[in-house]
Image (tube, rainbow, N blue to C red; front, side):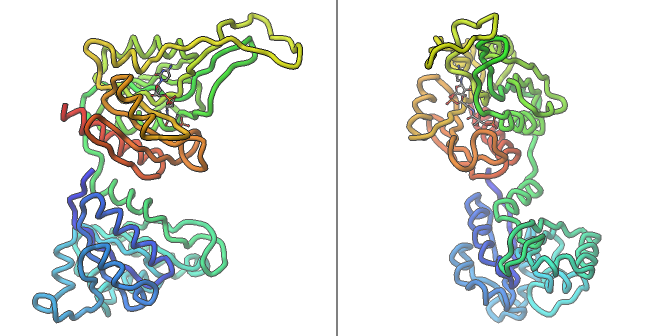
Length: 399
Ligand code: PMT
């Protein structure tokens, strides 16, 4: 996704100021132009030079700037901005803004700005909980200012509670969703998605399965619906609520998933295989509970059908997107699956690591196709799914 926007970042003086450097990097990486305004106290926490290097532009700190046209930097900056985000927003700047004070560049800019304004508060938990701060925030909200965070957790002062600035990636995701909302990039397109694990029964009470929760696949279904698609979701056993407006087909085994996906795939323009399908299933399913006997046992298994490879072999095939769950050599294995299974794209994720992959709220994806690749940074699966759907739509509409 490219963000063709002018982002004006205001940094006020708090220990979280260093985190805003990452915010600049995230926006610039997606093509946005960023200008930075710092309060005097912010420059005591992090140098203006850091923001200058990251944004590629001089940092503004003075209300009356002789270097700027007409010495009116607050007016020209306010006109330039598509969006003003103040991160971190201290209790002091929040109080000033809520009362319309304009005694430095940042507070004056807020008054001159006509674009959407966002604040990411950061302060000690007692300051955040003070009634006067609450009133100031409520006043700003009434004037249309959007508040992001703060989060709960350990604070630099050693206390615990609400007051930590939201993580840069969360602020970034929040802003990109608002200023570049999900476009109907798949309007009317039929998208088939597989999600969750499969269960391969051994006997009436036992089965083999894996750690997939279905969260990634369900998030993709929601994101595709949001992008205007007609969605069919073939789901293994999960404890998730079905996305409203998706056509849900529940299955248990790899064989059932194979049948459901193959019969639906012919009617869909896109297939996304996010399910963790069993590679092997037991040859014999005992009709009675298997009795304990001996120190060791063997289960004979047979390879299950490769759903993804069979979908991409259809004539004509839907635009086929696979996943690759890897614990080593991510790119090499993902690219090998891309070629061998004749896929249009593959989204690879590390699994079995501390963060991301199976049964977690967050994930990161490395997406590969014949002539390119893109990394989608670690974020919650809802946001990640929206990014992946945008990328799939871009490639699908290109071909
Ligand atoms: O469900 P969550 O907890 O949110 O976790 C998400 C996830 C980690 C399960 C998901 O992001 C993911 O990686 N899904 C694919 C898991 C997997 O089975 O990967 P694989 O590398 O073993 O398989 C490669 C591809 O072949 C996958 O698209 C898979 O759906 C497909 N496959 C595999 C075997 C088979 N018999 N048929 C298939 O279609």
